[in-house]
Image (cartoon, rainbow, N blue to C red; front, side):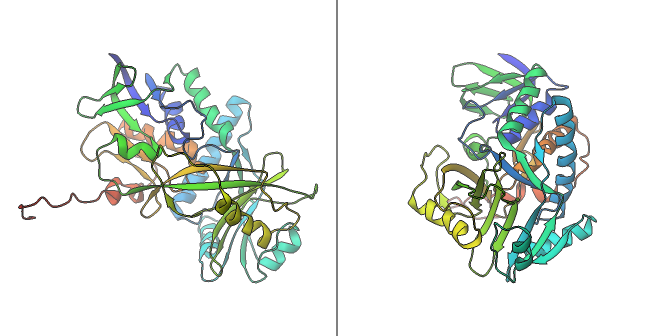
Length: 381
């Protein structure tokens, strides 16, 4: 049996970040049932939005500030660019509070912003045709991150740190009492610390009654017809007509990527494979038709990903409630990629037994554990 200080289960963007960080000081192994970067979760795709004033809450702004700094550190060490700070905006129509929350977050942390109407935004950025009365919070500390480039970057760091990567390797059983992992090839490994970052497969591996759902999402890329286009990353909560839209230019600025946060809210099994269909196309093309101009209405490509959703859409970053040395990371619900390098730091504080610099109360696992069902003939206490 191979012995390690740390075992990281799942090497999506979260697990890869954790492994890269912990392998700097611990003998570490990372295990994934696929070969990353892959399309079996939600870490794939060309790019993701990153912004300093997320509308999900103040703790996320703290994580974002640290994420910007860490991405810059990693870029200097590797000689690669991961973050493209282009500016961007949060926008909403009443009754949504999305833009107003972004404004308050900017004010709280003294981040620069400019408030304007949708009509003013349309004049400044000619490829948008937002509702005239929409509230727009335009922010310079906004952009997009090279998703698969940074994912691969974390894996490269782990390899350079001499971490073992067991790829295309399925875990058949997790013994949390003995800290032992039984692998599909018949071998076993043991680790003093286990960090579970398995995304949609989390519930299959860990025996906790977690309130998690796996849902299907689809993204689409549309050709930008105007060679002088001025598309910038954005999040738009359309309270009047419905839809929580987001988008950004491709890294070569030739296409517009569009997604809708809830999409069709289709629950799926983690292993279930689906392909984009006409319903997906119609939903995503609706935004392009209604709110942009100079963009081809037919998607050039589409891709499916899996969202792992908690009931309140906040993350899980916590110790296992019953097993010392076991930690659960589910930085999920569709808005976790932008904080990628911070997860490694947080995992390091757990493993080292040190106080984390962030207040992680909102990410406690007990918020998402359902009580056990009553046993027949036994009165509840």
